[in-house]
Length: 323
Image 1 (cartoon, rainbow, N blue to C red):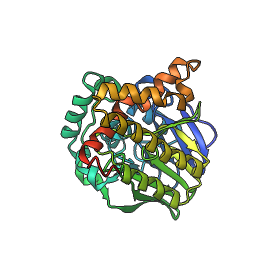
Image 2 (image 1 turned 90 degrees about the vertical axis):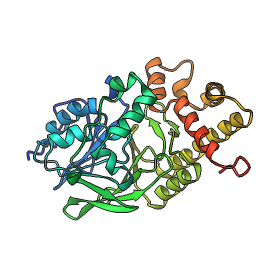
Image 3 (image 1 turned 45 degrees about the horizontal axis):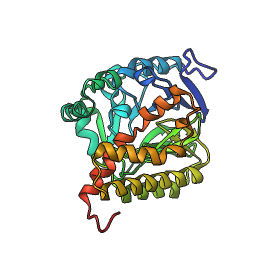
Image 4 (image 1 turned 60 degrees about the vertical axis):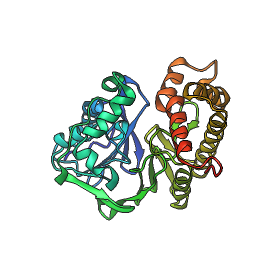
């Protein structure tokens, strides 16, 4: 492996220090939607693959950093949603020596993605092909399943420690780098828009649960990370304030959706109400904001998906007990 530490040949790679490189996967042709991260040590590790359609972009980015087909040791995903893990099958084929690491509740869907893809097709329809592509299956023998905790060997005594963090999804983990203190938060802390500093929850159906989501955020704070690396999108250094905002945003969206639910509003009307009452919280949705930024923010964490996930949860719990 030839390691290139001074710059790179593509414009979607950003060095973050500590041999960590952010890769813009250019999801659906957009910049700043989904990030993958390469930890370039003795045992190179890719955290998050992006979508299947992003696989060529990620491969080119790794090549620009000197990582060839035989060099990548590990591919690990925070969870199996297609914007995070849709490229696993394609990248596993390109990097035949890489071990694929995922929480045990998501492993079978990487080996046989048929149910996951069928469910995604029901949600996204024809948009599925443009936004995500098709998750290709991975040989089950190459998949290592994680329990509530686990670790990935990065070489040289450095490791990536996995911590089960459901709430957003039942197969979600956070990943703490022992060398840098970076915490890869997936979607458990919401989505972050670096241009405006906006932070919004990610509460899609069917797995969202408020209590476990808040517990996961509390776990992240207790781990004492030095920096948060959002899959959507990028690094954030103010850990305590950011995680506090993550919890606050969850409560705001749940309270408003609960109000709509108690008033008997259907999904469309609930979305309209919650969207209107949260709009002023986000600079990206200000009337003076750039239209492309607003479009990207909605693609990152759309109100219809968030409200649908919270309503799904509310319909499962006792209305009298709330969370």
